[in-house]
Image (cartoon, rainbow, N blue to C red; front, side, top):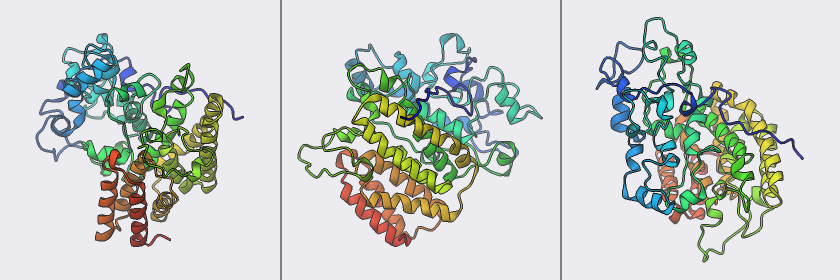
Length: 427
């Protein structure tokens, strides 16, 4: 039996997340001045764009996250959960707003601003007036409480605290049963769609760090898999008296039509028979592909652990805790490598080939895994800059296949995987 590893509630790379940083959160209005981050157009004379507030307020869905809690769907969800409403319930505000303690809210802080600047960048109490002064360094700002979102590991921890969840705030099966949408995340895709409000140029690289689409993808994949493995060691999995939190399992293990009689074992879940509920391994399989590009033997070891995890889920909880602890420890040393080392084109092509081959083997018959696979192929293909018009059309069809989980047909995606392999010259 593998050693049991303690659940880590905060990022090794960054310390506490902004919601728990203990600092005064001053509110987005303190960033909105035209001499700060509120310009309409990008600034040419500055090392930052200075229109970040406008990008957030006009184009970023985070700014409307609180308002979502006021619509009819949220009201219905709240009613089913026995809540008076959604917009005053911590269980909702923890991810739909910058829900810091009342005594940590500054004079211009408003909870209805949604997921504002400080929900990601940390309470500005100690760095608001100093972060733009001449001579101030990025490290000094971090020491004053700025959250290091430029560190891809820390960014992953932050994003996943809502887009996957923590042991203390999680979109449980009960919440989803009441009507909450299923969560998904891939760090590069979500960074672009946010949309980005910064530019990685020479100045950014000098002041902060380097990043690329594939670094975001690789680091995000490893952090996601490790965080999921840690959730399997925490109270969501171990403390429920009758059965573990069902939200940790693959939704489509159960939510399939009774008329679909086409069940067959996937290679990684060969130990599970029909009707058994499968753990959500979508992030683990992508992480295995990433890990293989840094160390092929470690990638193979992770695949064996994924198989062992599924086998353990059919036995007892402690076996799952033990195996997931081994997965988390295996991944941790490679997160910084993925964040800091740019994979060479041959490695990126190998990663894409690996995902396509897994798809052909039936590893992504489940919708969540398919969604992760398609987003990954998209990131890698555009980073390589080599998709032909026909390949781009095939990518578009892949996204159409996974556009709606109710209409997902695995055989259609396998067909598109094969078409893309042929177009991309993958053996």
